[in-house]
Image (cartoon, rainbow, N blue to C red; front, side, top):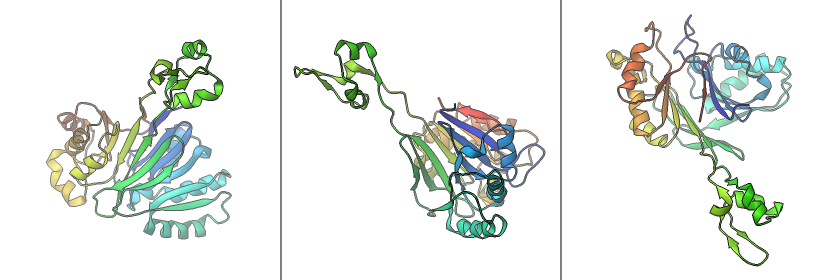
Length: 305
């Protein structure tokens, strides 16, 4: 079972090609699947990667350009044919919710599962999802249309109990949960045993930021500051910087500058323009600004450690 894993379904831009598919990713967090964007063919890569449709309950759509959402209706239809039972929530801007409700009503009548739309407010930072161990927050990006990025953040974990100390002080089971959460233990005689003697540090929390289509903007680095791993679009090389500005995109070098400013540990780049036969130049230019860069590719899995 994956604890916190990124699965790349598509990392190209604009349209499908023989090399890359449009944008889509799956976050596998403790055996629960969260999809980010849903370009064409996303569900086919899910099959190839053996990611189970039944475990997918949340889809986050960054913006309403086709290469980020044209696969959504087909995926919903497939989920219906597979007789999915649990509810599906699509987190999307208001215009997209209106549009996809109409298409679902026409093409996917009588869904066997509950379909909900959660509206992402344009230009705002907003908590979209929360459970006992994870939050998902939207933040603004700077593209030609309203666009949002997403931060997946683990909540603080419990400290590790030192079994030999539990036995030594004969600590009742009912006290263990509080001790894991940092409480001291008071013996029946009134002696206070400090938590640091009873536990060791909790495992570090992991976080992941998805920065979809966006111009280079220092506000993005501020929004994702401190995140462990960042995915940032890197559509163009330096020589095509003018195209990046005109089309609301970033270069690989700019993506790396954002990662450096955010003090991230790792950067994944993707959303490659089809004009390039390989991504070597993109990687080289990114590495000149940031030391730990991974090229996204279909079916790539990245564990957050």
